[in-house]
Length: 401
Image (cartoon, rainbow, N blue to C red; front, side):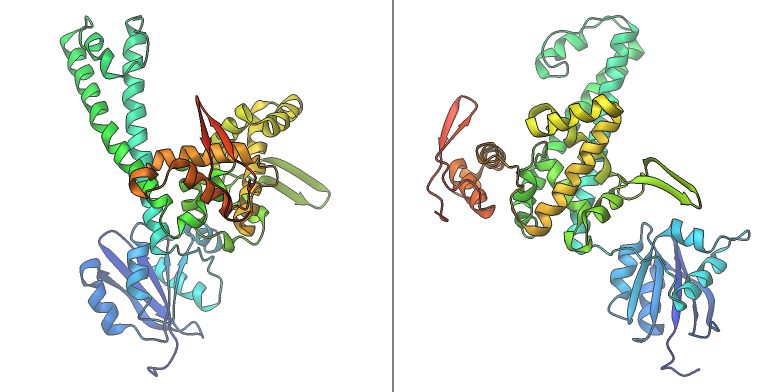
């Protein structure tokens, strides 16, 4: 076999090893399946791979590590979507060797359903968002257990924030069995430990919102009702690059908020949402939609109209879908929302500036920071005063005026 012959290589990646096999363009096996341990894989790849090779692997836990390792060594590395590969190549006999050669052969004939490979900064943000979500889930489970304890014993909780430090003596003074007191004490201790960890993660997300490339996109999301800083960063991490979605419909489909459709012959049926795609891009817009319909007149009117016709649950999903369409437009065109109210958007930006403590971190007043963000959106040049709680902020003149 000529060293210049193009090889199509399949990789079946596992936690401890990689199964490797390759075929040529004529589907002839040019590298029989072999197992390479992950510890030895870097050396094996440097020695045996060629610049003309094309490689495919499934999107698994180690996929990005393998991708980064192979990308400089070969002509192309394709990361594929495992469920779609299984649909294409369903088999009654499944082994690592067969999976490897199926991947190689599908790559050779151009039938691999490739996924987008996020750049390093997107991966980092996604990992941070996932880490925060795990901490929040742990916190929620602890609080649920403590609420359950109160229900079991028919205890009336004190006023104020139930888990605040001021109520800690009340919790510790409850008349419970020794084992229940032990569990109660440990749950409260874990709650105390989680709070600063979550705060630290959110501080880092705040910092990233002003770092490249996120600072160029964050203002366009924060101008929208229902979207706060954590929500905006979660949406941006899921989208990655808005340019990869040629239409709002594609973004809605990626979020799994599009409707199921069955159309064949004389039959045409639509069903619920597909729930396919990135789940955080589905859940977070729904949470944002609930906030938007509560505080924004435009979205509230749409929701009320829809809820009357199709019910509240379906209506909020529809609002979330519409919100995603707006997100696609403002991010793609880099413009202010056409229904944006300058004074309300200015309040969002003042709140953002206060969250970021821009006075100490950037040497800017919150009003100066809000003006910079408004100018970026080319919005509210004539705006001078913005009520915010009990305070009225005076904005400096717009640089665009």
